[in-house]
Image 1 (cartoon, rainbow, N blue to C red):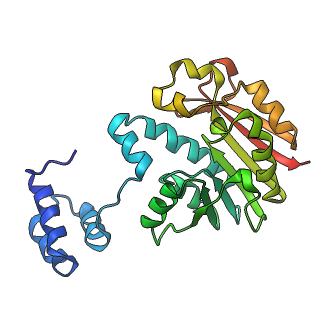
Image 2 (image 1 turned 90 degrees about the vertical axis):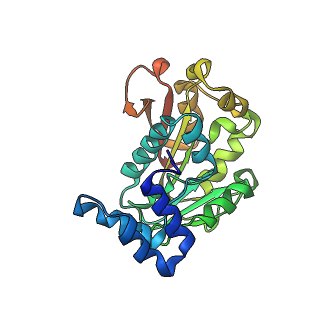
Image 3 (image 1 turned 180 degrees about the vertical axis):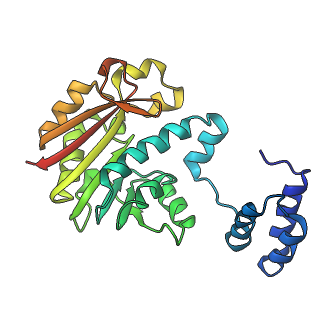
Length: 253
């Protein structure tokens, strides 16, 4: 928590106000760590300042901090499944705060969202070290060019798509895949919704049970692997007790 009276944060605030030219002098004067190995943190601040949350993660951090651990765990699962892929697409990235978890393990990444507010936020905070393309696109309007992604994922997106539109949404995602590409969709289970927060329920119009989720994806893929998730743990346990579901899809029809 930011404490405006703490010596550390007074030093940070003073260094920020003083401008980049005087940052090094201010940091060395007011931010000396008692353990030398932590100097890298001060050097990083001097070079780049403090990283910031995105629109969605900032709200989550303020209202329900543990929710971010679940988000990161979902992105880590995708990162492990897609490690080594050359060209990956994220559908429905929102503020893309956790997107760099996947970016770290792939050659290149593109993220899209249909809401320009999120796209603007993502590009304003883009890191040179973990850069990726981000632009506005509505999956219901068509595939994402150049439609040659060897990995595509969408986390917490399908449940926001009206049932009448879900086939168009999935079909356009499949058309964006390269031959022999892999697609991963993740969504809250239907059974979890009795415990969902009001802000989640407001947008969840299409949650599914695992059998229904698998049946939808099998319309478009010969092979669909299903996984359950509770909090940060991915497993193959009883699906009706799972809070979250993953479909890992290969060999498009």
